[in-house]
Image 1 (spheres, rainbow, N blue to C red):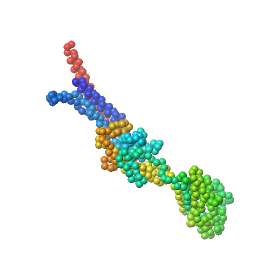
Image 2: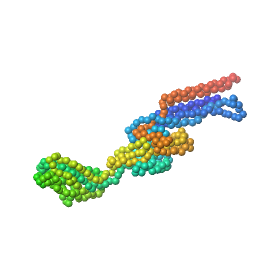
Image 3: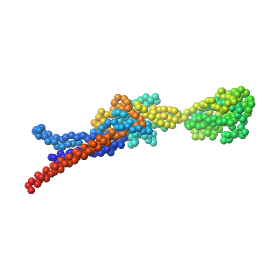
Image 4: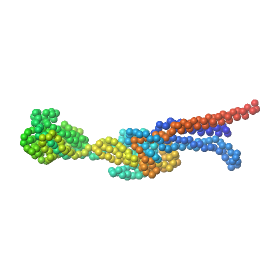
Length: 418
C-alpha cells in the first residue's frame, strides 16, 4: 500500500510542477490568468473500521483552479487596445455569422481587411448596436453585433454655389502680355483658389485668375476660372468682366454668373456652378485681398480615427468632420469564473460550472471600468511561482524518498529467509 501512497504523492507533485511551469511560461502572455493546483487526501473508510485505525491512502489532485486576479496594466499607442479594470470579460465570436461566443481578458484588438475589429486570432469583438444619436438600441448577448468600422461617412453633394468678395488694387498695371495664359504669370495680376466638390464628393480646386484690362474710370478686370485643368465658360465666353466706377465701387457683375455645365476630371456627372462676386467687392489703393469666400457642397468623409471612451462607446471620426457612434462594448461576467473552460490564446468558454454569462456595460453594476490604449498583462508573479516550484520539488523529493524507503523495507522482507 505504501508504494501507491508515495506514488500518488509523486504524481500530485508532478502535476503541481507542470501547473507552475505553465504559469511561468505565460508570464508575458497578455490577459493570461494563472492556475493553482489544489489537493485532497484519500482515505479508505468503512463503517466497520474504527476511526482511530484509519490510514490514509495518499493524495489526489482536486483541481487546477484558475485565479482571476487583476494583472498589471501597460500603456499602448492604439485606441483599440482595451483593458478592464475590475470584473468582466470581452465577448468575442470565432465566426462572423456564428452563434458561438467566447470570452477574453486580452483586449489587444486590431482592424482586419474588412474593417472588423478582431483580436490576434481573428475573433470578432461584440458590441451593442446604437442609433444615430448614440443611444443603445439592444440588450442581451444574442442581440450584440460584431464591431465594424465604416470606411466613409456622409453623402456626397456637388458644389452649386461659389461666392467671393475681393478687393482689387487700384494701382495695379495692365499685364504686359496681352493674351491670357494661366501658365504665364505676366498675363494676369492675381489668382485665388476655392475648394469645390464634384458629383462624387471629391474635392477639386477652382482657381480664378484676375487680369486688369483698363485703367481710369470705369476700370475693368477680367476673371478667368478653372476647375483643375478645365476652363469654366458662361454663354460661350471664357471670362467674366468686372467694372469699377471712379469711387472704386463695383458696378458689374450685379448678380451671380452661371457657368456652363462642366464635368471635372474624375467626376461621374456634370455640374453647374453659380459664381457670385459679392456686392462689397471694390477697387481701392490697398493690396489685393479676398475678404470673404464660400462654397457649398460636401465630400464623403474618410475614416481618420477611432476612440473608445470609459463607458465603452466606440466613436469614429472622419475627414469631413463627422463623428459617429458605432456601438458600445459588451462585457460579460460569471457567477463562478473559475469554472470557465480554457481554450488557449487567453480565451475561455462558458460551462455549466461557470454559470451562464451575465452581460452589461463597462462601469455598470458587477462590471469593471474600461480603459483605452491599455493592455492587461499576465497576473503571474514570478517570485511567488519560483517559491512554489521549490516547494513542489521538495514534495516530489520527499515522496520519492518515501517510495525508496518502502522499496528497501520490501527488499529486507524478501531476504529474511536467506
